[in-house]
Image (cartoon, rainbow, N blue to C red; front, top):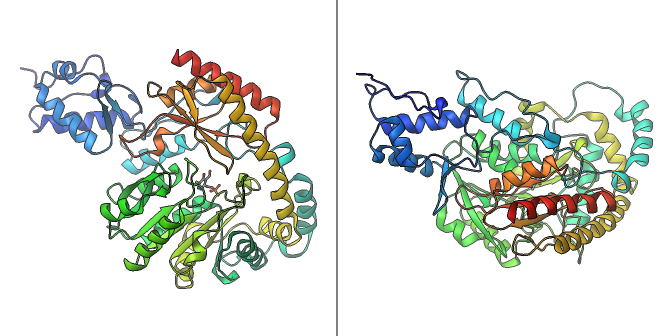
Length: 495
Ligand SMILES: Cc1ncc(COP(=O)(O)O)c(C=O)c1O
C-alpha cells in the first residue's frame, strides 16, 4: 500500500509520510511551507477541512487539529461564515503598482527560515510609485528644492561637508545641536545635544531601540494596530511571543489592558501624538498612566513622533518625552516634513542609554553619511526648516480637506468611511466588512492609484479592512482624478 497521499489540486502541499508520525503536524508544516514558497498567499481561502481531509485521505479531525494549531500561531485566521484563510499579516507578493510582475523570487527551499522572512518583508515594504495616494511624497510646492540645492552646493564644495575620515557614530555635532534646539522649542522635548543620535530615519531608531532595550525573553507592548515597520522588526528578531499587541481606543493605547496583558514588559512602543495608522492622540490620563507604569516596572517607553509637526486644527501636541525624559526614548524623522530619501532622523535618549545606542549603531552602519547632515544642520540653523513647515502645513491642510470632501461625496457610507483626524500626511479610509483590502489595493494599482492595506497593521484575527491614503505633494487635479478612480474601484467591488 502507498505510504503517501498527494493532494492533487494543491501540488505544493507535497506528500504525507504515514510512517513519520503525527499527520496533523505534517499538514500544518505543509501549509506553512506552501505560504513561505508563495503557492498560497495572505488572504487566500483554504479548502474546507472536509475536502482537505479527503484529499490527504486522513480523518477530518486531523486537518482540524492542523488548522487550529496554525490559527493559534497567527498563521491562519478563521471568521465565522467566511471559512479559514491565510492571515493577512503574512502579506506575500502582490502585483506592484502599474501591473509590474512580482519582481523578486520567493526564498528558495533550503534557504534559512529567516531568509524567507526577510524576503517577505522586502516585498511588503517595496516603495509605492510616487502617485496618489502614496505616503510622504514631496513634490511641487512641498519639496524644499531650491534652498536645499543652494546649501548643498555651498557645503559640499568646501568646509564641513567635504570628504573626511570616519566620523562620530552619534552624528555630526552641528546637526545634533540644531536638532536639540528644534525639538526643545517645537516639541517640548527636554534634552541637550549630547543625548541626540542622528539616525538614518525612524526605522533605524526603532531597530536600535529594540536591540538595546529588549533581551531574548523580554516582552514589549506594541499598539494594535501599529506601524508594520515596528511589528516586522519584532518578527525578524524572533519576538512573536514577546510582542504583546495592546488595543487602541479613542484615547490611544489602552494602558490598563497592557498592564493586564504583560505587566512585566520591558518596553512600550507608542505613537502618542498621532496614533499610527488611526490618528488619535494619547490622552493626558493615559500618558500619565503609561509613564507611571514604566517607572514602577523599570520599563522604557519608545515614542515614535513621526509627523506631529503637521497638526491642522490647533497646535501640535507636546511630546511624551517632556513629561519624563529619563524613561522615554524619543524618535523623530525628517522623512515626513522634508523628504524620505534624505534618510535622516534622530533618537533622543536618556543619558544612561547614550553609550548603548552608540555601540548598537556602530555595528549597524558606523555613522550616518556626513555631507547631508551638514546641509540639514544649516537648513535648520538658518531658519529654513521652520519656514518650510509653515508652508507645507498649509498645503497639506488643503489637501486633506479636499481629499475628505471628494471621497465623502463619491463613496456611499455603507461601503467606505473616512476616519476623522486632524494631523499628518495620511488618512484611513475604512472599508465595509465584505472587502478584502489586499484585493482593493491590487485593483487600485491596476487603475493607477497607490494605496496600502490597513488589515496587516492589526494583530491576526483582530483587523478590519481599510486603506491608508497619503495626500503628500500631489496637485489638486491628480488627487481629484485618483479619488474618482479609487471610488470607481471600491463601488465596483462592493456593488
Ligand atoms: C509611524 C511611522 N513610524 C516610522 C516611520 C519610518 O520613518 P523613516 O522614514 O524615518 O524611517 C514611518 C514612515 O512612514 C511611520 O509612518
